[in-house]
Length: 169
Image 1 (cartoon, helix red, strand yellow):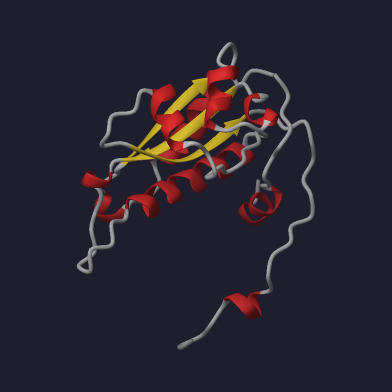
Image 2 (tube, helix red, strand yellow; image 1 turned 90 degrees about the vertical axis):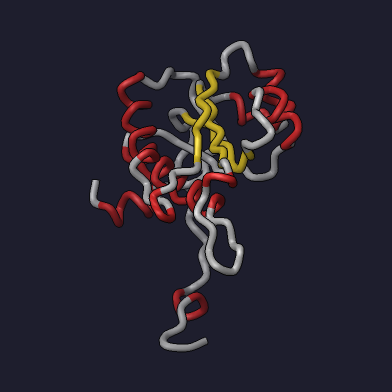
């Protein structure tokens, strides 16, 4: 698919089919995340792939909306801030790095005919417990991963004139 079309086709899916995701398709989606650039190539992120079947109740502790566990898979992207590059002013780039990896993942999923939905409003403590995360690992974002049971909605985005400045603010 042409890249601009791919970007336009990606949307936040909130209804999924129960159709399993073939391992080779999952592998290509995960590989896209692995290839994402990170600051100083530190690669301070980890992905946890959770098969939802039989784990719906514990996953709903993390995020309660019913569609979260409709997809056959849920992916949690985590960072290890102590392994991330730090800018001179102290800004830790762990969240930036994991966001780039997740963007690669969501676009690769769209290219494979899969749906995703970026979820940041989850219960961090429940995520830690359910996924058995060590203290040094921070869960940043979740996404279901599966075949959409709905089509895209029109995107509502601010115009470029509002978002882009040239040379100065």
